[in-house]
Length: 254
Length: 259
Image 1 (tube, rainbow over the protein chains, first blue to last red):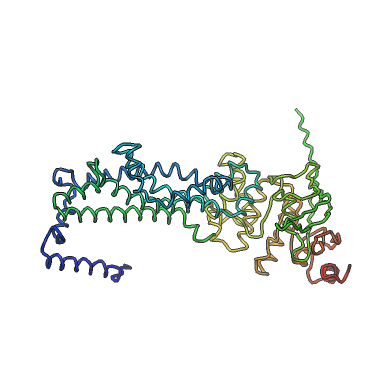
Image 2 (image 1 turned 135 degrees about the vertical axis):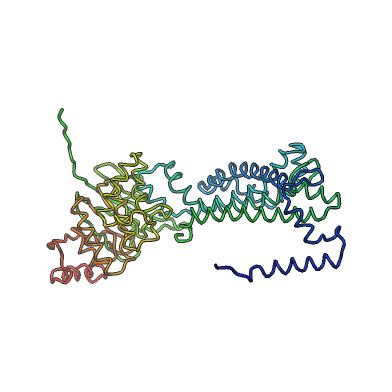
């Protein structure tokens, strides 16, 4: 087995430091000890203070992020393809996009609430906004990176514009699109947790963390954070696995 | 019922092709000037010229990938204005799609024609067999050697049965041994499929070995300096006296000793 201990060295030392500090401080409202956090994590189906279990809340967050991410992808991929393919589309949309992109998704919260009311829609809006720009820019980049010789070789087969899009532009930019989706999903995942901390939400990991904080249950807060981290890593690994399986050609030919 | 199949021989005519490039500062550079010649059915034509004379641009104009500033390319009397399946092109770098297997690359043209999967696989395989790549049909392009990639590119160009093959320095990146082998294969394939071929090359030896007719272009702007028939017997011996004499003659035009 190719197991490398040094990769675990730092996290293990941190956990050790945490436990030492927790025992030293001896105040569960400031720093809960590892045992308390683990007891929450190891019983993921147990109800927490009447707000549902860890799994219930995680599933809720995942459902929201998946929906918001899907909306973002459905908008950003076609728009990115257009921007990569037509200079006019780049000119028209480019300025607006570079002006909106630096605005953090959470800065939209007040407007989102004003437009869409408190609830699922405004949370989806924030998530979709977070995922939108990385997917858009990566898609446009991917299309611009499609080799001219590929386009020319296929146009010599008598290909129409639609053939070129289907047979060259889409598959040729797919690795970048996928990479943009991976980055976008990471941001969407951060956004969902933050959006769930807003007033008017009554489920999700973000809600659970704020709710448990209100009850002084810091071990639940930390357990929620750990769950967010673990889910984030797992999904990222899923993206990487697909990339290795389908887009390995990218590393050979560019 | 009587089927009357009229097989008209292919004819490609270049009429006064001129290409100017706008340099962006108001100046235009003439890269090709008033180029006219003809290519007949089953003929192999080599285009030679000093580097920067616009050989590749000329080939791209023939292919319809670029438009001339003046003049026209006529394929069987019809002006060529855009790329199409009547000509097959083999690029300097193979230009195979890396996400498709060799077989999928070769059958893409048939896919575009909406030919059913079984037939297109059969046909693509027969052309892969012709270029000696049957056993590598499932490989990805990046798993092949340079020579094999160019063979795949040849099969891909042939599968749509074009009347004319265009080759843009297709063997320049190959080692000498592979190069000789693939040149011999091109002649064998040409004999079998009786295509006309336009070959842009910077190798005088390659041009004389393959071509029936040589078009020698002058340096900027590229003009037709000389058209030579190659009348050597096939198979040609690169070391024969006539071959070497011809080579001297062509080199004379290229380096300016012969006006």
